[in-house]
Length: 373
Image (cartoon, rainbow, N blue to C red; front, side):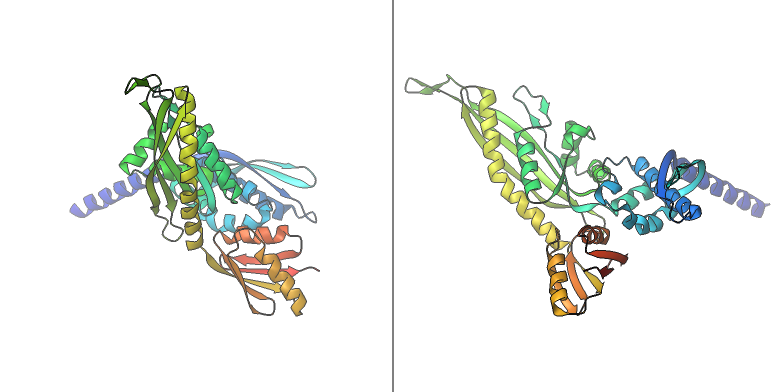
């Protein structure tokens, strides 16, 4: 009797666990499209279903930046799709197939496990993609989510080659939530922001202006203040996801201050914000550069078709001029070791965009190319 009871309890636990797993899944409709080459419809169907699955994953995570927009030649992420979607998409069924002659469009309903979907999407996140959220309080204590500091900082980051997303217009989070996350050390909101914008770095801050001396105030000796003096204080953090451990870490945290004088309090605040961002920007750029350098990995690049020194030097020069390549070392004729801080798929894509190479094969640490003179 006792044995039967134990068996029944075990069955009940298994059922509840399975039910819980199913409850965690989210089912969505998604579409995928692929070219029909040489009238090979089965291959096109397989590719379009894979892309539809990836689209379902992006829907569940809620990303605003699509993988296809980061990797223009989407074929290069097929391997990523094949390795990631296996354990993420738990089940799917094809709802519709539309053969348009040259392309096949497939619509599916896919059930996705959200936690694993976030991990899959984060594998395509860029170390040089930065999400910025720096709300500023107005003197009337309301929050202004887009301001001189955030706009100027975003401009400077873009000048340095970073991919920058201004979080404020997206309504991904609100100022109160981000302020609470920063103060309490709760990085769940920040991690969700990273997933949403395919970023590994978030710059968060809060700006608080205060009138130090009001215009017309008695400052002694029978004198009155001719201008309004505003002091602007900012607290900020740069939070990044460690590419090796996946854990969140604080790259830097600090405070900055700016002062402004003007006839009106609003103009004085604007001058204070300009003064603040001038001193703040170099510090942030320095920390981001250190982070990028610390994430550089070595990628073996083998180039078929390199048979002489002149061609070898031309290929090496081409590789060195790719954005975010930290260095290129020739190990032997046609083989190079390339320092690169991002997912190898982006390096492969950048190489292909040069128009001189065909990408034959790539793995996280190796790319094989054919050079076309």
